Length: 472
Image (cartoon, rainbow, N blue to C red; front, top):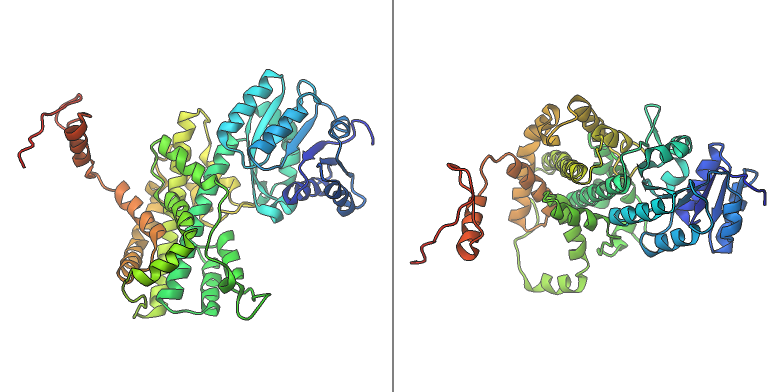
């Protein structure tokens, strides 16, 4: 194997790593991949054909074949696998070399890895990568954070391999430390929320309106050709057109209603609670995945816990139009919640995030790419210090114009016993945020009453405690 011949190396030749390497090769870069599975290393070379691509199972050969200063990217599962790769690489590489973690690592792990590598005079970038298998192969959205100088060394490679929108690559350096992985975590939280909202619309159309798969497919396809256009809406329409390959009917009806998760949505909710940022729609999306796992209990409860009839006896076409407005309103609300978490995290962790850049790179390649992100990008371009997306003049008008439809959808589903917690929390977030007064004064009074936790007053500065009357 030639010495110092390859521009960049990839550790992990699973679906994502292999496709990303081939993407780099298509862009004119010489690349080498490392995997302890010999078949994966051989398969990489076979698929690459005549391109300057190599696969190996030897870490020493892998490192020796890279140009100096070296750039190594990892696409391995978060957690112990990342720790193991870093531990293996440190003795083999030299001061000034760069390691890029392109997996879904928790941002606190990224901070830990950055500190450890810095102590060894090595550079580290934590980079979120979104787009799945197809994105890795033909252009993902990438969210790098860490040393900006180190990023500049690999910037040409990532810009060449990223998705493009309006001729611009969907990758930006986002900030120091774990900024990139944090932004990817929030991206995934928004993804959870939107998936839950779409699933609720499906349930309402199926159980409430009694629509068959063919009609539901047409609705989602029509929505994808409107302001709701997005990758998730596009694949949803495709899903309802997929025949069952192992039996009669459509595949969607053969899939068990037990949704799995890898934890990134949960991480967003957990850190939001630490930062005191409300994410009700994202929180509920995580909770509903948990609820779906109670399949056996739900089947028993279906026979014991009675509710109203679920059929909606109204004009179906008219209700679908209202459901479309409800979905759009809720998407805006979900993005607003995610961006609010990023705003708080940027202050707390000193990321100094540029929200226009984030919205821009989310417009292509990633799972949450959507036409709505054009409006979100414009909102932050107009006002980089925007307190909340919902108060942008254009987006606020979207919410005002569509709130009546969402209120009717939520009212109907509640009356009929069809669970729509994502839609409900999207509306509750809007109504809470626009409320100049919330009943939290009573909560403070209760806390002081039973625990002497004190309270503040609206008519005087300071902190107060009362001796509460317990005569009742």
